[in-house]
Amino acid sequence: MQTNKRTLMLAAVAGLLSGGVRAHGDEKHPKSADPVQKEQKDWGIAGNANTARRTIDVKMLDTMRFVPDRIDVKLGETVRFTARNTGKVMHEFVIGTKAENEAHAALMLRFPTMEHDAPYMAHVPPGKTGQIVWTFNRPGEFEFACLIAGHYSAGMVGNILVASK
Image 1 (tube, one colour):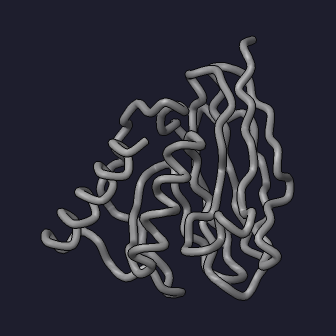
Image 2 (cartoon, rainbow, N blue to C red; image 1 turned 180 degrees about the horizontal axis):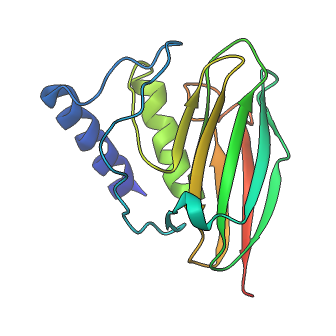
C-alpha cells in the first residue's frame, strides 16, 4: 500500500508540474473531447455504451451516503451507471478497489483542490447527473466512492460484487 500512495503522490506532483491537474472545487468538470482510454484495471475496463444492457441509478446524498450502497453485477457485464447528485455540494462516483480508493482518498485530503479524470470517475455538481459505462471483466468485490476530501472517511462508499456467471 505504501507503493500505491507513493505512486499517487508522484502522479499528483507530475500533474501539477505539467498543468494536468486542475482545481477540484464545486465547478463543473468538462469532459475531455479525447477518446476514452480503455486501460485494464483490477476492477474492469471502460465499457462501450452501445453494449450496456443495464443502467443502474445511484443517488449521491449530502449525508455522505449512496443509494443503493451495494450493487451486484455478473462477470463480463457492461453497466451504465447514472450518478445523480441530490445534494448541495459536489460529489464523485469513483469505481476502484478498496486499496486504490483509500490511497486516493488520503491523497485528496492532502491535496483537496486536485482534479482528476478517468473513465471510472464521474464528478457531479449539485443537482446534476454523471455517467460511467464500465465492463466488469474481473470477479471480486470492489467499491464505488466519493473521494472528495473528507467524504470517503465520512462513509461515502458502496460495494460492487462481481460474481462469476
